[in-house]
Length: 229
Picture 1 (cartoon, rainbow, N blue to C red):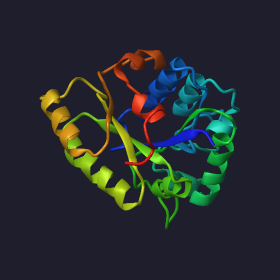
Picture 2: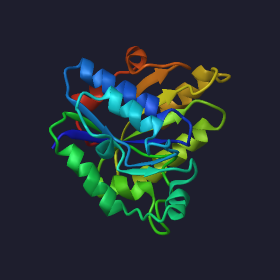
Picture 3: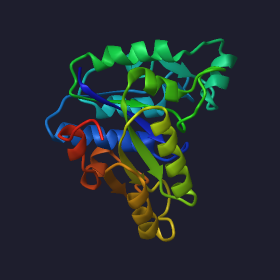
């Protein structure tokens, strides 16, 4: 099976998709075949397509149908379990995991499964997207939105990931808006407290392309390092 990771965020709007696209571009530059899945996306257009999923589809090297990239496409831009309820759809971690495995087994060397929102986003009354990561037993790449409160959010998310029995494979500091005050001090604190390598420190890039993030990312530990810490 290809090497695969689950991309989680400390919150919604922290730049998971931009970081995922940057990681895919960096892996492609390293000569790897890449693929990605956005299993659940809320906020789709009249064609049933989500902007984030389209970005992922464009950034990967593999030629996947949209339905493979985003198997559960929800119209309303609200919490996925609420949007699914409005549309009469049911989501289960085991079913989503099966759809993800179809891509993971497709031959790509580097596969990302991008979550939605933060770590504990519900998909039904009993499960969250964290259960999908557990079902797949993937290492987690955490995208930390560098803004006020990021240290608390990052540490709580990392703790939850460990308690769920998964490895924090690495984290990315992403600036989703204008540079936060005392950025360097916050970054240093996170480096001291998060038990995983820093994969990149990405500045605010309002009109980004996947390749724009590559100079700010180092995926060496993902593609050559051990999976267990």
